[in-house]
Length: 271
Image 1 (cartoon, rainbow, N blue to C red):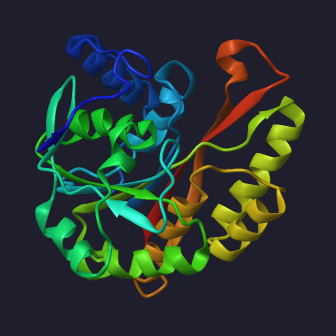
Image 2 (image 1 turned 90 degrees about the vertical axis):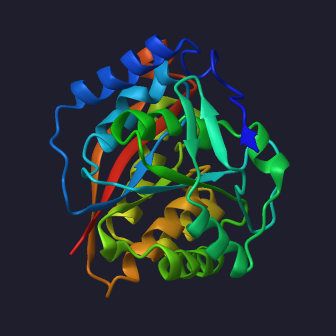
């Protein structure tokens, strides 16, 4: 059972050659060398024309030799209580099928995380990340997760399950939190809100992220996935660091400064 592409031709090119060229271009433009200490990324998930360049800055820093990529996205289409772990055989894009890591998937299932097919069927936030995996590591397997419950407590529970089946100290697992930031505010307001969220990310503080988002002082549709990433990294003896590597808004592409969407690229390093 495979999940067919849902947003090819809308969020990214449907033509395989054009898609591969676009992703490779983002990675080349980023200019950074792969960093062997990177265990996690925060990447935006708008259409590539808006946020692909920012996403490429994070993907380019991920290390060589990655075998499993866990992609945690929020839910935009179907409400999800808790989290849904994709249990199909493969996740297709115009570049072909990306096979799932059945060991990690089954491990999460035995720890109480089920599969709701409708949560994944139209979820662009996970789909737009998959071509980056396919270009960087053609043989890597993926674990797509849609996280609906965006609390630090639930994120810690999901992170603990991930730790048990895919620990950060192995060096061949990458966890990706898919998130955009504030939506449709004037650029000055957007930048103020976004930098509050970024400060909480750099402080490695899931509780601060939850508080900011709950109070409306920051926005991030993928706040839950980001909190899960931070909890997962902290489980590695608490020795990790975070870094913002790029920030942008939709105004850079659209020219509209009155209703912008914020995008960040961040990395999480072991040690």
